Length: 222
Ligand code: PMT
Image 1: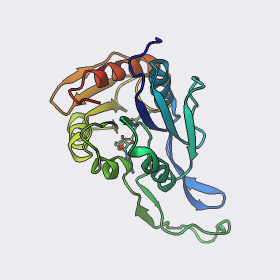
Image 2: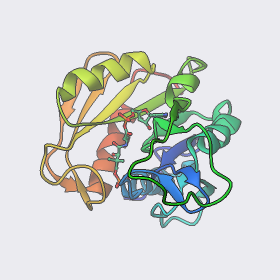
Image 3: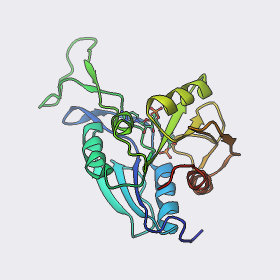
Image 4: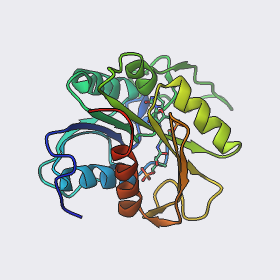
């Protein structure tokens, strides 16, 4: 749907997976395709928003040519690109699946196969949404995602509070048609002021439009 609902608004979106290097040929990552983030980016741009998309490697690109894309690889790079833009933004949507841990040491040469086992020491990555959430201005809206496998509502509501989101979108790995890779999603939305809403299984562009509607309904003045 085309319109001007977000005309004059600056929107930052993180999307896709991050890759954490082990050595020059290997990495730790996850199954995010970037489809959900791309659908959200297109929905905002189609409503006149100025969209800045921080995009993990290999993630699906949006269609709207007005969207500015910033390619990144690791969680650290995603944080740098996101924090550079954060202050000027009206709305930030954290749709990326960011690796929580990265190898402590990145081997400079390909690791050789020696012995029957091996251990990679991991260290915690920066939490982008949490860190920027601490600097959220009263005029900014932060939207988070939660991908859960159990105790979904509890974990989503905990992340809503902890990361200072105005709204969180929960998708559960237990719901058929929801989550990574698929062209559809099924979500529950929780807002900071206590509202909740559940979707059917719908194409990701329709889920994106539902998220935009709920952002528009938030009490925050942007
Ligand atoms: O890309 P698709 O294949 O279309 O799949 C879409 C999706 C399932 C990846 C997406 O809908 C989704 O749920 N994204 C968030 C997945 C996730 O990693 O959630 P989380 O519970 O680990 O993180 C919670 C929130 O904090 C998220 O908004 C996340 O972007 C953010 N976060 C997490 C860790 C970190 N280091 N930095 C962050 O900003």
